[in-house]
Length: 343
Image (cartoon, rainbow, N blue to C red; front, side, top):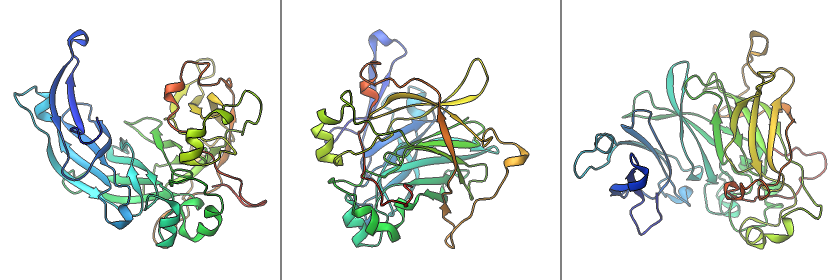
């Protein structure tokens, strides 16, 4: 991928890493591609078209394309658009993860922005101020359809008065969802999402029409001398004065080799590399923890409280671990009034 005015998609043959070569370059007529995933067989691409002002009509969402000519190394290959599904309640669509739930294919994706570039613009139009999760049924690749969204309280326009009192940056990244990762992409039961200033959020998606939050974790703020808070005016300028930590990297589902317990590995802006385990028996799923999530009248899932996640691993700063490049954003928001829940 590359930025405009260059072609946004460049396919490179790396079968011989010492002699990598460009196969083709392609630009989308539907809008800039922000992220992509290629199918296991290499014949399909799931490209995310990013519109910064989708609430005002910019294309934003999923584009399914045929990449078979590239996979087959045909001469002068091209990419063919099969279908697309756009939405206008959030913008800057991030990578769409292809998963299978009970054998059926879905794309689970997030948006970095609310409906407009700034939270203020979105709230003025009665639209969501921050990005959230979209779950898309791709069983019929020619007609993908949205089956549900996952939103937190900060994504609800009804709470604009509260969230705007905290918004102190130019863009609406602060409380947006960034990445979601499946526990098993071929047999998905849960996803873990890096929800920026709302921390790590884990959802049961066995019923994609009624996903429910089962766990959450907020990395603690660091105000000590070793904090990087004082040395990043660039992020303060773009994303706001940071008063707590934020989670922006992709989350890896791992296994403790000693106990066999599932773990979540991730990096947060202030606390670096961390390892979490789920508590209170919320995962893996058993017959004892099967419940149905409450939904609103519109069918959108209302995230519940969830069980707290226990941090069991080290607290290693990203720079010290040689992982500074993986910290994709440093996003922090001010605290809600006492007694209100950060969600």
